[in-house]
Every structure is written in structure tokens, then in C-alpha cells.
Length: 216
Length: 392
Image (tube, rainbow over all chains, first blue to last red; front, side, top):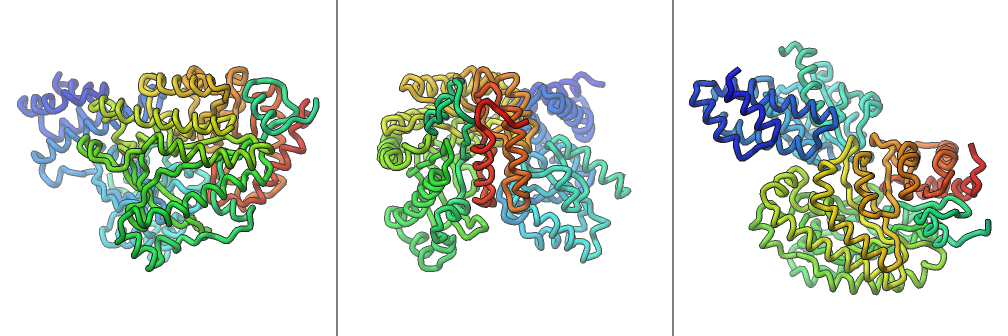
């Protein structure tokens, strides 16, 4: 692997945001393609950050800083990429359920999924169930991440599942949940497909969904 | 051992001295529960947020004309929550008074420390509030923020409120006073956006320091006001962690906040009072940091996070008073059975009571907490919490 690619990995791992623009340009000057920079440099660096987070060596603030660096780099690279290469893992709908305005965790999940190759359609916070289901129907996106922090609002998760069932879409759509009040128990109770304990877990969950849906 | 007053029981527990029974602490209280206890009529959310008449005035008239209405609603709500805790008979009550908020329109609260909250219905017919967004996104926003708190004015109001409140309820309860909404990191998270705080710390350290100077000053001044008014214990809420661990590394927490908290707590101790820190989530990696700052008690040890309250009692129970234990995700909701609450209280008392330095408490406030469930918890502590601990 080229030294310049390794430098990009290290910039993400060590959170050296002041270096990233120059390192990306150096890679491009050496003939490395934007996709290679993303896959071999940024994503690999982010994998290490995720591993260190899982091991308890890194904290959420470190994830945010690393995500910020990756976002800055991908913004530079996206102008040089073909539309087909952007979000090539597929699209994910993210939303915080109705009655709940907390969306910080969701934004972090979006940032990490985006860095991992997903295109994010963020419906925002306090989103009515009908709007989420309508978005699934109109976009044809079958990967959905729902955020809920308030215990008083968890019933919306089941409502969304029921509406998808009524529309004949439940089997085609994979739903993951996350947020302060979420647990595997709640995921089972509400009938969703997965629970993510941390933002880092989201990539593995949605990669798994893609395999289950035959999208890989 | 002779029966103690709630105040004596709580103070001695915070000092690690023997007491007659495990004290019970009320982790603040939401309006629904307070209204149930006081039997007062609900203040409908529509009173301000949806009523066309009031919202017209709130949206069109200058704030100085409409603030008294919104302010009265808010202050009345906070006062009722404080009174309801006292009337229930908790040993320690978490009394909040913050009169500094602004109301730019019918649905918005501007928290003076730099963030925007929504006025919302709580689902039970009452007014409540919920974080909406950062108020400061750039250094330019910081310079232009129109609502910075007036620490002296807030301290004066806090003194007046707590002087009266302590005279009425301080005899039969240990008041744990909280005079400005939001701790140092928590306020920063709201103000800059939690996903931007690490970037501000790295790129704008001068602004972070200026910001924390403002928040530290108002906490010190409101705490002095409460202590002058006769409040024996003060508290700051500062959520340093999520359910899986801290937001910032322990090293960064110490660097950014440590010297400030040490000053705050030293001031409280210098006045002969006690200090409790509330921090949600799994703070396992931060407890040594907090103890190093000099806290007397730590709340909340949320059962839905990865923290192990029993293990913490073993590790730190000789240095700090552990406060918490009863979950609000199930036990203190309509869904639980009374006997399940009693069983949990007995379990907590048997595991955490021996050796003292334990106050039983809900791990958080919650809109959906029925007063009856709190009462079951409180009654069980009084029934089974006497020293020497006899439940197993």
C-alpha cells in the first residue's frame, strides 16, 4: 500500500484534521483514485477508530472528530467522483420518531454510515410514522434507521412496523433502532430487525441487512 | 439508634457517618407526578403553545410584555414540582429554581447559557420543555448571543425563592438545591451541539474558556445564594456519559472541567455544605475523576446503562455516597407491579445499605412516572431501610 494512503489512514486514526486536505491532494497527485482513497484510506482509518471505540480506548468525541475529518475529505473527493460511485453501498433512511426531537445520535450514525459508503436520506426529528412509511414507499429505500430516546414514544416503532405490514412491505424493509431507551428487548417487543448499542455498530448492522436482502 | 431528621440523615450519609436508616432521594419530579400529588389542576400546554389568543400575543408582542405569562407558567411548574417532593416525605428533595429563561415566541425557550428548547405538551396535559437546537454555531454567534445570563440577578432571585422555600419545607426535608439549569459540559453540549463540542474544544479553546467562565460564575453565585438561604446541599446536573460510556475521555474531562469543578466544590465545602453531582449514563471511567474533584454524592447509576452500581459501591463506597438504583424504564412506570418495586428496594438496601453511604433514589425524573409508584418505593425504603440492615 502506498505511503500516502497510509498517511490518510493515520490522519483519521490520530484525528489530525489539519493534515487531511494536503494528504488527499497528495494521493490524487500520485494518481490514486478517489474511490481508493475512500476505501483504502478513510474507511480503513475509520475501522481502526471503531475498533478502538469498541475496545474502550476511544470515546464518542473521538468518533466525532474522526467522522469530521472523513466528511471533510469526502467533500473534497465527491467533486471528482462519478454519481455511480457516491453512496455505492445503497441508501439508508434515518429518522427520529414522532414526539421525540433528539437527533444527535442519529446525526453521528449518519456521519459514520456516510463515511462507510452509504447515502443518507435524513428525514429529521419528530417525524410522523406516516411520513416515514411514505418515504419508504416513494423512494424504494429498504434500509431504515430509527432513533428514539423517550420511553413515552417507543410505541411509534411498532406503529411503523404495523403500517409497513399493512402496506405489504414489512418483509422487504429492514429496520434498526438506536437511542437511550433502546435495547434488544425493546427491538423484539416492537418487532424491528436490529438494535444498535453504539453508532459504530450501525455499519455492521446495515452491511448485514444488505446481505440479507441480497444487495451485495 | 435514635430517629434522625431527614436533614441529619442525609447530611450524615453524605459524610459517611452512621445513620438510622437508608435515606430516600427524589430525583427531581415532572409535572404529571407533582399534579397527582398536589391534586392541582393541570396547566394545559394549549395555554401557551396552541391557544390562538396567547400564541398571537407571544408571537407578536415584545418579549418584555409576554415574558411574565410564560415565566409565571414555568416558575409555577417548577415550584409545584419542588413542593410535591416535600409533601411526599422524601428525605432529600431535588429543588430546581431557574428564573433566567427567555421566551422569544409561543413555542420557544431560549436558555440563557446558549441553547434553544421547545415548550411542549408532556403527553399528560402539562407543559414541559425539550431541547431543540444549539443557539451558537459559530464564534460570531457567540459574540452576538443576546441572552447571556446575569449571574447577580439570577442569584438574587434564587436567594429569594429558596429563603421562602426553606422556611416552609426545610424543617422536614433536606433540600438539595439547584439554582441554574445545566452543568458545565451539559450546557456546552446544548449550546454548541454535542456533535460539535470536540471541534470547539480543539479549534476554539478561547471561546470554550470564555463560555465556561460564564457558566462557572453563575453556578458559584447561585450556589452561594442557596447556601445563604439555608439550603444545606447543592447539586449540579452534568451528563458526562451515554449508556455505553463517557462522551469525552477522562483525560479531557479533567483538563477542561476539572479545575472548575474543584473550585465550585471547594467553595461549597468552605461554606459548610455538601455537593452532589448528577450525571446520566455509564460513568464507570469517570468516577475516580469526580471523586478527585471532591464530590460528596454521585447520582444516578442508570440501570439502563452499563454501569454496575453494586460494583461501584464496593470500589468507591468508602469515598463517596452512591445515590440511585431504581429504574424508570419499567419499575417506576404504570407497567410494573408494586411488589416488584418493593423487591427491588429490598435488594438494593441489602446490597448497598451495609456500610452506609447509600441513598436510594430513582435514576432519573420521568413524565410517565405515576405518583403511586414513587410512594411504593418511598414506603418500602422507610419500612426496610433501618440500620442495622435486616433484609436479605
